[in-house]
Image: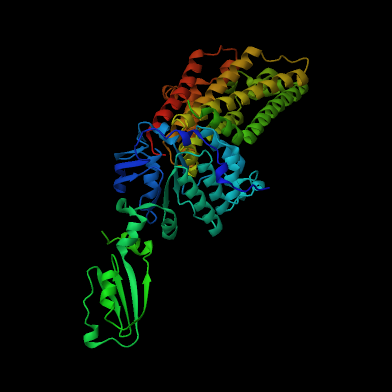
Length: 326
Length: 267
C-alpha cells in the first residue's frame, strides 16, 4: 500500500516557522579544525562555512578526512585544535544542543543484525529530541522504495541498499534543520538515487541545509550548490559548482572545409584560449571565459562546424584530487 | 539525563532472550540443588559425605556440602552460579565498547543524548538483570523448599538465604562495574571482556589462595571475591555491611570512572 507523495502536504513544523538558534549564523562553521591520532594528522586546519538553505558537497578520496570532519561536527570525536559550530552553537561546548539540530547518516551504518527496521526507526525517532510525524516517515519510506512489509524483518536480512535507505529515513524522519549525509547514495540503485536527489531539492526549498560528503562527482554536480574538496586532511578547493566549472574552461572543436595550413594557420588566439590539438582539418581549443574573441578570430578561417563542450566538474576536481596539485 | 530511558528500553529488548534464559536457568539450578539435596537426605548419604570430607574442607565450607540445609544454600555460592552471573555482568558491562566497535554509537550519539547516558543505561541494565536473576533464584528456592523438602530436614533460615543472595548480587555488580570501566576506554568489546574475565579469574584465584595461605591474605583484599564469604554466612556468621559497602563502592566507582572516561573520549 503506497501513498503518492505530495510535497504541499508536508507538515508545517516548528522549524518552518522559527529558524534554528544563532540568528544569521551559518548552518555550519568550521574554524581551523585539526585532528591528530598520535603522529597521524587526519584533519589539518579545515575552515569551512556552509550557509543556511544550501546543499553543500564535501568531496575527497577515501581517507581524505571527510568522515573525521563530520564526526567532529557531531561531537563524536573531539578536535585537537579549532572550533566548530552549527547555527552559531558550539559543537563541543553545547554538544547536545547542536546534535538536536542535525540528522545524520553515517557512511558506515553500524546496525545490530538482530534488530528489525521498525525498531531502529522508533529508537532513533525517540532519541531525536523532537516529535516525528509518522505520515512524513511513511512518505520517505515509500519514496525511497523501502517496502513497508520489510520493516518488521531483521536487519541481517537487509541488503546493503536497503540498509542505506533505512539509514536515510532515520536521518530525515525528524525533519531537522540540518542534514549531514556521509556518502548518501552509496549502494543505491539509480532510480532511488534520483528519488533521494528530489527529496534533497525539496528539503532545500523548505529551508533545510544539507551537508553531504561524496566521492561521486556527477552526483555532486547535479545536486550541490557549493563544494569543498578535502585532500590529505586539508581543504584544497572551495567554490560554487558553477564557478568550479568555469575554472576548467570550455573545449571548442573547430572543423574546417579544407586544410588550414601556412599563413592561414598563423592565427593568434585571444587571451584565455590555448590549443589542445591542432590538425590541418580540425582544431581543439580550450577557452576560459567568453567565446566572442575566439569567434572573431575564427571568422577569417574556412570553418564548417563548431562544437562547444561544456566542462564537467570532474575535469576540474580531478586536479585537486591529485597529490601533486596545489 | 536525556536518552537513558530510551536506551535502557532498547537494551532490555535486545537482552530479553538472554535474560529470560538466565532467569529460567538459575531457577532451574536452584530446584535441581534442592532435588539433589532431598535425594541425599532421604538416602542418608549426607552423614557419609561429612565423614569423607577432609578437616580443612569441613572447616572452610562449614559443612555446606554435608547437610540438606547446607547443600541448598550452596546453590548461592556454587562456582557455576558465580561464573554465569559474573559472565553476564561482564557481557552487559562491555556493551558501550560493543556499540563503539560496531559503529552503532554513530546512530545513537549523533542525537541529543548525554554522553553519560550509555553508561547510566548499562549500569541500570546490570542492576536490573542482577536483581532479576537473584529474585528468580530466591523464588525457586522458596518454591523448591515448599514442594521438595523432606519433612525430616531442616530448611535453611530465610535470613541466611537473603544474606547470601544480597552478597552475591553485590559481588556480581562489582564485577559489572569493573567491566564497565574497562569498556569505557576500549575500542573493542572482546578486549574489554577478555580483560574483565582475566581480572575476575585472577581475583578468584587470589581470594581462594588467600583463604588458606596467610601470606597472601592481605593481597587478596584487592579481589572483590574477598568480600563474599558464602561459607561463613552458611555457618551462621552475620552479613558484614562493610563487605556490601566495598562491593557497592566498586560498582559505583567503576560506573563513575566509566562516565568520566566516556565523556572525554573519541567515540
